[in-house]
Amino acid sequence: MINKKVGIIGVGNVGSTLAYTLAHKGICSSIVLKDIRENVVEAMALDISQSANAAKSHTIVHAAKTGKDLKDCDIVVITAGVPRKPGMSRDDLLLTNAKIMKNVIEDIKTHAPFSIIIIVSNPLDAMVYTALKTSGFKKEQVVGMAGILDSARMSHFILEKVGFGAGQIESSVMGGHGDNMVPLPNYSTVAGVAITEILTQGEIEQIVEKTKNGGLQIVKLLETGSAYYAPAHATSLMVEAILDNKKKIYPCAVMLDGEYGYKNIVAGVPVMLGNKGVEKIMELKLDERQKELFENSIKSVKSLIEVLEERFF
Image (cartoon, rainbow, N blue to C red):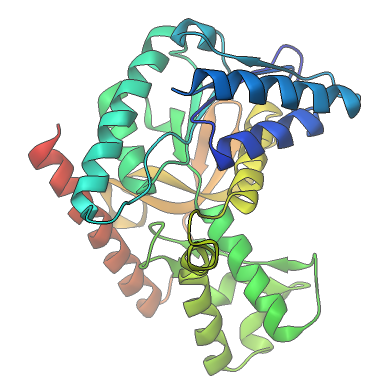
């Protein structure tokens, strides 16, 4: 952990909560925050750094003045992007955030070309694809955060249903980060027991639907924002696994190169994270229904990529 540096580009709710989490856990020695709102970022850096001192953490938080401040980052987390606004089509959001991603990647290519990049911006899978295509980086170097969050949401809804096993629930979700994600009940357990042994098919289907709409539920309740505590913590787990070379298995969005029968497409699958980034892609054995759902998820991501290829790249 000595002299480990993390950059966070885009310091809204997710980015600032991530910086606070990393600083308090002492995961890295320094954090640099970058955002177009320079005065806000400077204030956040001071506030979080002071809170870290109160917690007796050794992590120092800085506000970036220019892209040069990203120099020597081991990891750069990108949360930058705009939310969908009234009257904005799905394609408008996609192209707007792709332009932002391209500008951010240019800074990273210039000042931190050997860093591992974690993408949190939406639409997640398409943004991972954009980052890879505009950077020219190796596919192991760019990874998207979504599967850990979706799995945590599934675990919450399992706990809500069974009423026991808090802290002992492991859930597994594959596919794109959206309506076509693929929760895997047979790989989801309570204290090591598959939920297919505990719950009825109808109860499992309810959990799956709630998982798919977990983010939307929070958006509707907040009205003016979206989830940030769970996404930030999920991202911190990825940062920790990479910096400490933990070789942990997490579901993440990565470029497939023949795995599961797909190439040149980004999808959420279980991967091993270490100090080289994505060190291995794990291929789960899927049943026919799960293969069909995964294919539908791939098609959904492909539709976004087709728009990018036609109007952006």
